Amino acid sequence: MVENVNVMLKLFIEYLQIERNYSQYTIGSYEFDVKDFFMFMNEQNINSVNDVTYSDIRIYLTKLYEERLARKSVARKISSLRSFYKFLSREKIIEENPFTLVSIPKAEKRLPNFFYGEEMQQLFDAIKTESPLGLRNLAILELLYATGIRVGECSQLRLKDVDFFLSTILVHGKGSKDRYVPFGSFAHDALEQYIHNARKQLMKNQNTHDFLFVNYRGGPLTTRGISVILGKILEDSSYNGKIHPHMLRHTFATHLLQNGADMRTVQELLGHSFLSSTQKYTHVTNEYLRKSYMSHHPRA
Image 1 (cartoon, one colour):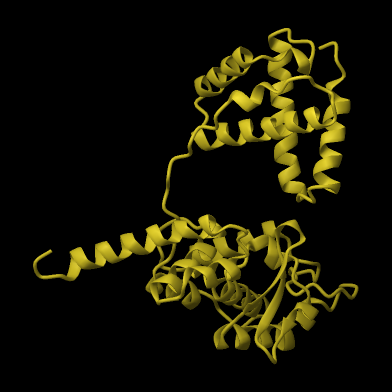
Image 2 (cartoon, helix red, strand yellow):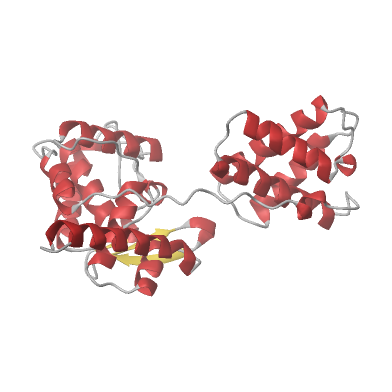
């Protein structure tokens, strides 16, 4: 490719970091998608981003579908490229933006997976709290279920973010949006037990830091580390199924709505910018009610 697209990509990444304040994970996805399109341009002998036409994009979409990518993955790639070209247009690097003509394929609607009450109890029962790591694992599970915070948000919590008097945590969410989230008595007790009886023991060989959750060496626990812990809890339980970290977030929201919480409250607690992001849980609760009706009504 004649044109130095890497310079454009570098400028775009700086824009995402500085102006959009996106996380490194999100920026990594954008970078991957744009680089993938650059490879396609090279294959098609397209020498400039200005030379890309709507027809070229249709060929690219066909290629993605031939690779059997899910509609969600294709939609993400097109969204990334649309943002990239919008940036190029803003910077006067391109004359026309062909991606304005491309519609993003609608993703398949899937109901979020969540745990039923008895399944959550199985997870809690699987944790042995005789060791410092067990107390830590219980505190993590209780807090995730009590607050619905993301695993990434959980890994970033610091001791000063926990207010035991008000039973709230200060969560540093996506896009530097902070929010206060309350937690109940079970999470309160588990956190106190962990901080006073376990965290100090785990920290004994580590320089002082104030991250709330730590690994067995005393270092800050990563998002990946929390995911591994949740997987191990599932293994030790009698629950037959798979777990992904977001399931606890889905469970938190679903259980709140099933028990009468209003949508706006759940939106605030989850840190969703738009109510539409929260509305998917109403489909879950409606399906739950339908199944309950069909199972228990004598004339269903």
